Length: 113
Length: 114
Image (cartoon, rainbow over all chains, first blue to last red; front, side):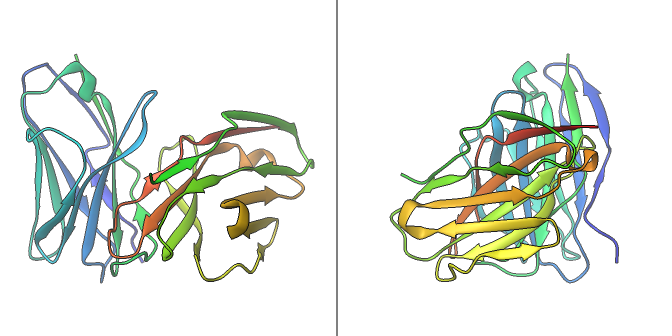
Protein backbone atom coordinates (compact mmCIF):
# COMPACT_ATOMS: atom_id res chain seq x y z
CA UNK A 1 0.00 0.00 0.00
CA UNK A 2 1.36 3.40 -0.94
CA UNK A 3 2.10 5.79 1.87
CA UNK A 4 1.51 9.51 1.97
CA UNK A 5 3.23 11.13 -0.98
CA UNK A 6 4.27 14.74 -1.25
CA UNK A 7 5.55 16.76 -4.15
CA UNK A 8 7.89 18.30 -4.85
CA UNK A 9 10.57 17.03 -2.48
CA UNK A 10 12.64 20.18 -2.70
CA UNK A 11 11.84 23.70 -3.79
CA UNK A 12 13.69 26.99 -3.94
CA UNK A 13 11.68 30.19 -4.21
CA UNK A 14 12.37 33.88 -4.02
CA UNK A 15 10.93 36.11 -1.34
CA UNK A 16 7.54 37.46 -2.39
CA UNK A 17 6.72 34.54 -4.67
CA UNK A 18 3.93 32.04 -4.18
CA UNK A 19 4.27 28.30 -3.80
CA UNK A 20 1.95 25.29 -3.93
CA UNK A 21 2.77 22.03 -2.21
CA UNK A 22 0.89 18.84 -2.90
CA UNK A 23 -0.06 15.83 -0.82
CA UNK A 24 -1.73 12.53 -1.62
CA UNK A 25 -3.02 10.68 1.42
CA UNK A 26 -3.03 6.96 2.03
CA UNK A 27 -5.91 5.33 0.21
CA UNK A 28 -9.00 5.35 2.41
CA UNK A 29 -7.81 8.22 4.58
CA UNK A 30 -10.10 11.23 4.58
CA UNK A 31 -8.18 13.56 6.87
CA UNK A 32 -5.09 15.46 5.79
CA UNK A 33 -2.88 17.54 8.05
CA UNK A 34 -0.12 19.97 7.27
CA UNK A 35 2.76 20.73 9.60
CA UNK A 36 5.71 23.07 9.34
CA UNK A 37 9.08 22.09 10.71
CA UNK A 38 11.26 25.16 10.74
CA UNK A 39 14.77 25.10 12.10
CA UNK A 40 14.70 25.73 15.81
CA UNK A 41 10.92 25.87 16.01
CA UNK A 42 9.97 22.22 16.10
CA UNK A 43 6.85 20.87 14.47
CA UNK A 44 3.99 23.31 14.22
CA UNK A 45 0.45 22.43 13.21
CA UNK A 46 -0.71 24.33 10.15
CA UNK A 47 -3.98 22.99 8.80
CA UNK A 48 -6.40 20.09 9.03
CA UNK A 49 -8.75 19.08 6.23
CA UNK A 50 -11.40 16.43 6.49
CA UNK A 51 -13.97 15.49 3.85
CA UNK A 52 -13.05 18.54 1.80
CA UNK A 53 -13.51 21.04 4.61
CA UNK A 54 -10.97 22.98 6.61
CA UNK A 55 -11.55 21.83 10.19
CA UNK A 56 -8.82 23.60 12.08
CA UNK A 57 -5.84 25.81 11.50
CA UNK A 58 -2.82 26.66 13.56
CA UNK A 59 -1.41 30.02 14.46
CA UNK A 60 -0.27 31.02 10.97
CA UNK A 61 -1.10 34.10 8.91
CA UNK A 62 -3.78 33.96 6.18
CA UNK A 63 -1.18 33.76 3.44
CA UNK A 64 -0.96 30.10 4.39
CA UNK A 65 -3.98 28.41 2.90
CA UNK A 66 -4.96 25.19 1.28
CA UNK A 67 -7.69 22.97 0.11
CA UNK A 68 -8.70 19.35 -0.11
CA UNK A 69 -10.02 17.83 -3.28
CA UNK A 70 -12.81 15.26 -3.69
CA UNK A 71 -10.19 12.50 -3.94
CA UNK A 72 -8.87 13.70 -0.54
CA UNK A 73 -5.56 14.93 -1.90
CA UNK A 74 -4.57 18.35 -0.68
CA UNK A 75 -2.64 21.44 -1.59
CA UNK A 76 -0.92 23.90 0.67
CA UNK A 77 -0.47 27.38 -0.75
CA UNK A 78 1.82 29.99 0.65
CA UNK A 79 1.62 33.51 -0.76
CA UNK A 80 4.09 36.36 -0.44
CA UNK A 81 6.87 34.09 0.73
CA UNK A 82 9.13 35.30 3.48
CA UNK A 83 12.57 34.05 4.41
CA UNK A 84 11.14 32.60 7.63
CA UNK A 85 8.91 30.30 5.59
CA UNK A 86 11.96 28.19 4.80
CA UNK A 87 11.15 24.86 6.39
CA UNK A 88 10.24 21.25 5.89
CA UNK A 89 6.51 20.99 5.24
CA UNK A 90 5.07 17.68 6.29
CA UNK A 91 1.72 16.30 5.26
CA UNK A 92 0.00 13.54 7.19
CA UNK A 93 -3.19 11.57 6.72
CA UNK A 94 -5.43 9.52 8.93
CA UNK A 95 -8.55 7.45 8.43
CA UNK A 96 -10.54 9.11 11.12
CA UNK A 97 -10.60 11.79 13.70
CA UNK A 98 -10.30 11.96 17.44
CA UNK A 99 -6.85 10.60 17.98
CA UNK A 100 -6.32 8.05 15.24
CA UNK A 101 -2.69 7.76 14.28
CA UNK A 102 -1.47 10.00 11.51
CA UNK A 103 0.99 8.78 8.91
CA UNK A 104 3.38 11.29 7.47
CA UNK A 105 4.85 11.85 4.03
CA UNK A 106 8.50 12.50 3.40
CA UNK A 107 7.98 16.23 3.35
CA UNK A 108 8.75 19.11 1.02
CA UNK A 109 11.85 21.11 1.84
CA UNK A 110 11.14 24.75 0.92
CA UNK A 111 13.97 27.23 0.80
CA UNK A 112 13.15 30.91 0.38
CA UNK A 113 16.00 33.11 -0.76
CA UNK B 1 -1.89 24.65 29.14
CA UNK B 2 -1.37 21.83 26.72
CA UNK B 3 2.26 21.09 26.29
CA UNK B 4 4.71 18.30 25.62
CA UNK B 5 8.22 18.52 27.02
CA UNK B 6 11.16 16.48 25.87
CA UNK B 7 13.93 17.76 28.09
CA UNK B 8 16.68 15.76 26.43
CA UNK B 9 17.71 17.57 23.28
CA UNK B 10 20.42 15.12 22.29
CA UNK B 11 21.56 11.72 23.52
CA UNK B 12 24.60 9.77 22.34
CA UNK B 13 25.09 6.12 23.09
CA UNK B 14 27.21 3.29 21.86
CA UNK B 15 25.58 0.39 20.09
CA UNK B 16 23.95 -2.22 22.34
CA UNK B 17 23.37 0.26 25.15
CA UNK B 18 19.83 0.76 26.40
CA UNK B 19 18.48 4.28 26.14
CA UNK B 20 15.37 5.96 27.53
CA UNK B 21 13.81 9.02 25.96
CA UNK B 22 11.71 11.09 28.32
CA UNK B 23 8.39 12.72 27.57
CA UNK B 24 6.33 14.77 30.00
CA UNK B 25 3.02 16.31 29.06
CA UNK B 26 0.58 18.81 30.51
CA UNK B 27 -3.16 18.71 30.08
CA UNK B 28 -6.37 19.23 32.00
CA UNK B 29 -8.31 16.96 29.68
CA UNK B 30 -9.11 13.42 30.71
CA UNK B 31 -9.35 12.00 27.21
CA UNK B 32 -6.27 12.29 25.09
CA UNK B 33 -3.81 10.26 23.09
CA UNK B 34 -0.05 10.11 23.22
CA UNK B 35 2.22 9.24 20.34
CA UNK B 36 5.83 8.63 19.56
CA UNK B 37 7.21 9.32 16.10
CA UNK B 38 10.69 8.70 14.71
CA UNK B 39 12.21 11.09 12.20
CA UNK B 40 15.22 9.60 10.42
CA UNK B 41 17.53 11.83 8.35
CA UNK B 42 15.21 11.43 5.37
CA UNK B 43 12.73 13.69 7.17
CA UNK B 44 9.65 11.51 7.12
CA UNK B 45 7.96 11.02 10.46
CA UNK B 46 7.45 7.34 11.21
CA UNK B 47 4.62 6.38 13.53
CA UNK B 48 5.78 4.19 16.42
CA UNK B 49 2.97 3.98 18.95
CA UNK B 50 -0.32 5.46 20.10
CA UNK B 51 -1.61 5.22 23.64
CA UNK B 52 -4.93 6.51 24.96
CA UNK B 53 -5.24 8.13 28.34
CA UNK B 54 -7.27 5.27 29.79
CA UNK B 55 -4.77 2.59 29.00
CA UNK B 56 -1.78 2.67 31.31
CA UNK B 57 -0.46 -0.71 30.37
CA UNK B 58 3.12 -0.65 29.31
CA UNK B 59 3.86 -1.91 25.85
CA UNK B 60 6.75 -3.77 24.34
CA UNK B 61 7.41 -4.16 20.65
CA UNK B 62 10.66 -5.90 19.90
CA UNK B 63 13.46 -3.70 21.21
CA UNK B 64 11.05 -0.83 21.89
CA UNK B 65 9.08 -0.36 25.07
CA UNK B 66 6.92 2.41 26.42
CA UNK B 67 6.13 3.34 29.99
CA UNK B 68 2.99 5.42 30.46
CA UNK B 69 2.47 6.85 33.95
CA UNK B 70 -0.54 9.08 34.28
CA UNK B 71 0.36 10.00 37.87
CA UNK B 72 3.52 11.73 36.66
CA UNK B 73 2.17 12.69 33.20
CA UNK B 74 5.00 10.85 31.53
CA UNK B 75 5.23 8.63 28.50
CA UNK B 76 8.79 7.43 28.26
CA UNK B 77 10.30 5.41 25.45
CA UNK B 78 13.09 2.88 25.90
CA UNK B 79 15.18 1.30 23.19
CA UNK B 80 16.93 -1.85 24.34
CA UNK B 81 20.23 -2.88 22.77
CA UNK B 82 20.35 0.20 20.54
CA UNK B 83 21.54 -0.04 16.96
CA UNK B 84 23.04 2.49 14.58
CA UNK B 85 19.80 2.44 12.59
CA UNK B 86 18.02 3.83 15.64
CA UNK B 87 19.81 7.13 15.09
CA UNK B 88 17.08 9.68 14.47
CA UNK B 89 15.08 12.43 16.10
CA UNK B 90 12.25 11.09 18.21
CA UNK B 91 9.13 13.12 18.85
CA UNK B 92 6.55 12.65 21.53
CA UNK B 93 3.15 14.11 20.71
CA UNK B 94 -0.22 14.68 22.33
CA UNK B 95 -3.66 14.98 20.82
CA UNK B 96 -6.98 15.69 22.47
CA UNK B 97 -10.06 13.79 21.52
CA UNK B 98 -11.77 15.43 18.54
CA UNK B 99 -9.26 18.21 18.05
CA UNK B 100 -6.99 16.38 15.62
CA UNK B 101 -4.16 18.77 16.27
CA UNK B 102 -1.00 17.00 17.28
CA UNK B 103 1.06 18.92 19.79
CA UNK B 104 4.66 17.89 19.45
CA UNK B 105 7.54 18.04 21.84
CA UNK B 106 10.74 19.58 20.55
CA UNK B 107 12.23 16.18 19.86
CA UNK B 108 15.24 14.26 21.12
CA UNK B 109 18.09 13.57 18.73
CA UNK B 110 19.49 10.10 19.37
CA UNK B 111 22.89 9.20 17.97
CA UNK B 112 23.99 5.62 18.22
CA UNK B 113 27.65 5.05 17.52
CA UNK B 114 29.10 1.72 16.41
